[in-house]
Image (cartoon, rainbow, N blue to C red; front, side, top):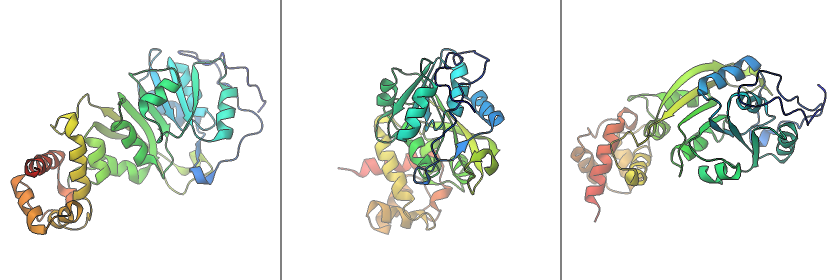
Length: 294
């Protein structure tokens, strides 16, 4: 490939021309940052199709990498705020997208609030989150936006296949991640990506997930009570293989008898396991817990 950092006028809403080319010399992927760059153009386009964005959309891309997905997003969106931590990749992105509708933000996505990230890119809500998430921080990034100060309209993210299965699991197989995601939005798995679509090739399959975020929490509790909701849910999953009575006692630091009384007040069978409980039952358990507080 030839190096040309000035050909960025080809990127913008509705433009069907070529993407800005990559320079001949590229930074090497950094294992410490979990970098696996998605290179398959057909898959990149399918991801952008799934976002439902248009010329008036603002996109916040997590981990823009070398900018391949960024370029596809920039063709359709009004503004793309491309967040990247790697110093060398930030420089590459700024050269590649100079003068375009892409705003490159050099930041650790987990160290700054969603509102701060948008502001750093000269953007504001409403917005959509898109990204090929590093496996080691995928769950944390998703929760960062769902529980953040300014929540997105939706997220379209590529995650490890097992993480996608956890996010979309129903009662009987739920995890703390299932509860955390489904408390705020409606996740669905779209399609699976084989390892060969990435460079370097990971050892696992990935799945693209779309999460449509509801205006208010889906658990029937006021937003101000969500801190307590997650306190109770985290406590309930303290020992997920145990019965919820024992797991909750461990997580809340109370006796098994006290935990059982709490569960019965909420109408939950103490002999069930944490993964069996539905969102509504975690909400009922939160109400019971709040009623017991002085």
